[in-house]
Picture 1 (cartoon, one colour):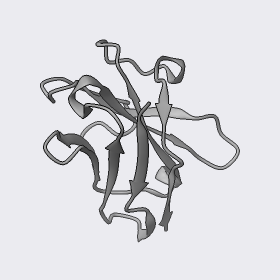
Picture 2: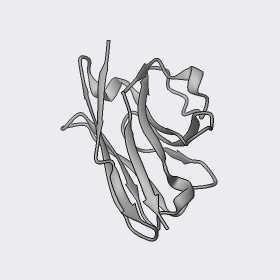
Picture 3: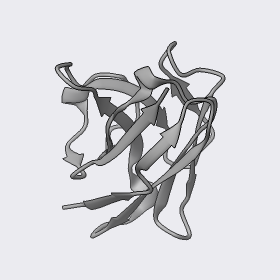
Amino acid sequence: QVQLVESGGGLVQAGGSRRLSCAASGRTFSNYKMGWFRQGPGKEREFVAAISRFGSTTRYADSVRGRFTISRDNTKNTVYLQMNSLKPEDTAVYFCAADAQLSIVADTTRYAYWGQGTQVTVSS
């Protein structure tokens, strides 16, 4: 079992930046690939970014590529999402997720563990 706790959400103006963190506990962190997903108002949960177990490989949704950066610190059992040039359409609850399978995928069903989410609101 892996427990995930997100933090760092809040209100930010369009064009601004925000860094989300997700702290993991319960199992060896480096055994898990990590992903960030988001769910906007009235929308389905969608993939944002993912990172391999030791950080050598990353993957991004087209909508955030070049603006968001996923990273991880296995010594701190934490994964980060640096969000720059934020847009109102980035407003959503952001979730981190973990899974022991190696492949970095965008499919929500391929992640076994989820955090509770943190709200990010981007004002125009």
